[in-house]
Length: 285
Length: 337
Image (cartoon, rainbow over all chains, first blue to last red; front, top):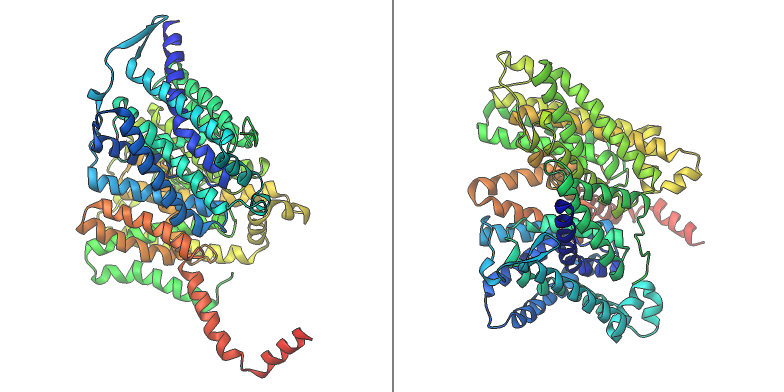
């Protein structure tokens, strides 16, 4: 029972983090059909930047700064890499972002070295005790921020004018263009937002997780599962899927022998791709 | 596109010279680099059976490579069966894995990025499973024990022997690919890869053709897996069953060009020596940087690869001279009328 409760709560905390990591990817996938393989590598970059800038007096200032940096990075990635290949098949865009991931990983390796880094001192001490499970406050805070970021992005997409233009462009590019929306601008903004949210989560993630050049691999693959399971472009879907994937991962780790826990997630991934590639939410936000 | 007889002979001559000429004068280091280049040329050509003219972007060929490496190694360790025989059982296992992937792809209509994703997911799953099965060596991997019989057990002290073997394998797979492309089955595999539904409408069974295509690619890749195991005398999930291995197989194909059978050979001969030079003289991270930048640049600026650019330049040059011929002008006039 204790094992179950612990795994359950850990899974929910993992879900909060996965949401924040995946919603940006979901947005980009939904709007452009581009599966951004570099999403995890960009998170890795954001974490290194978060460690480099360190304490700026307030965590909110750090978050805003990182959001700005990563949003600009997202815009640059769109203009430099995605736009020139926009007319090509999506598999080509997958290859380009795969190339970007390889570049970022190796650049980080050259610049920061392979040694993992983190900022455990910046976090909150102690654990939350609930129903016999011990949850480090660090991770609780991370999950809460993850959920908040997800809600904020959802509100931005559904309520703001820019967000509605992004949705319009993703549903019918031609019609959006005819009604005066600059699709290229909208796509650049979507990419900037999608990558920007990685900057929001990074200052919190470095308090619980060490960053090394290959950190992105695990996250991008988990985010793929979340995004495909949630449905292209669906932020609500990604939120629900993040809970499913988070629980699958921690319950799998609790009950399957060895390190087989993650294989439960990969089996889920294969099954979703085979039986429900349109995801839980289909094409809804 | 089918290659001219002359191009085919040049390709074979280059591989033969590398395999059998180089050991006569080159240093061991150069022979090792050539072995690596031909290894990736071989794997890329296998990938191309279903990747390019089969139209499917597989990120899962690491599975087939692993299937071959593990099958022959396990048979050698547990049953004492020589990898020369074990490699053929590896082909059977690799082909079975390939048939399964091909069947899934067709049965569930996995197209474009979804096929890439499924092959990626299956690689992750395979790595997790192998890492957790003790009899497969787990995450630590398996050492291929040194054999007193040496060559009879596919073990060589002389690196030139491995270079000769991979050269023969590369020539074999090139000849096979050219042959296959001229046959009905080759055309079917291309048709199903390019457009499942259209191929079905014209009376083919896409499921069967897709399974056979991936089985061929998987079986041939597995043969490369045994070569890998005997070259390194070590197999483990981290260096065999990882998406970066699939990328390493894929990259020479993209650089050289996917449309022609010789593309992967050209790509590997351009890319691998350059990478090895960097790796030996600088931080290996720079070789990784080159890999990533090249992938991006080739896809953006010449998605058809080097051979496609060469073909176009030649077509343009020929176009200029032929435009003046009277027949050509007449043909154009007829078109307009």
